[in-house]
Amino acid sequence: MNDDIQTILYSEQKIQAACQRLGQQLTQDYQGKKPLVICVLKGAVPFTADLIKQMDLYMDIDFIDVSSYHGGTQSSGDIQMVKDIDEDVSRRDVLLIDDIVDTGHTLAYLKELLKQRGAASVRVCMLMDKPEARQVKGMQADYVGFNVPNEFLVGYGLDYQGKYRNLPYVGILKPEIYQD
Ligand SMILES: O=P(O)(O)OC[C@H]1O[C@H](OP(=O)(O)OP(=O)(O)O)[C@H](O)[C@@H]1O
Ligand code: HPA
Image (cartoon, rainbow, N blue to C red):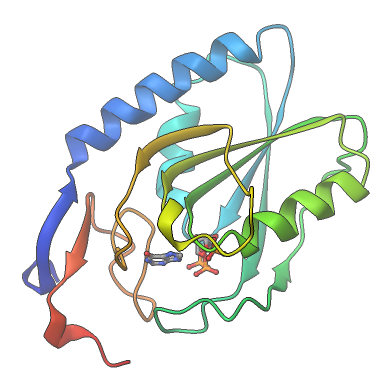
């Protein structure tokens, strides 16, 4: 699997340092609160697992699964709910955790959903932001680990055709691996 990678952009060490920095900031900002942390499946699993260990807070954790990349490298823009959360979000301080904001369609859908359900506050923590790919104007995360170039990335949760999520780093695939 590692042989399929052309370039490593964010090493395991850099990612862990980002988790530590973000975790400290979140610990300060949510002091005295008990946020409902929502991990966006499947890509945010490694990031959520590492980030919450750096947050010195009481919290509830839930999971939501929405999908718009149907196997390839292009967002369809059509978001489908695959698995909803179990918790009631009304009057909760919600912290949404995802691996990447790219076109912004997923984030726009999730923010609207949580607002409609009556969350007291909704903040978003992303490991990566790809600003050049944005299609939904003004869609931003409140906390960001890295601003990334406009490339299709894999690893640390990010997949290509379901693979590479378990890489401990984020990188770019060799061109011959892509099939679309
Ligand atoms: O800003 P966008 O263009 O909407 O892209 C961002 C979303 O795409 C990926 O999820 P995906 O839908 O591929 O599901 P997955 O996490 O299960 O891979 C990623 O984890 C984000 O949730
Ligand atoms: O660059 C990416 N790689 C994998 N999945 C993604 N989902 C949005 N952007 C990406």
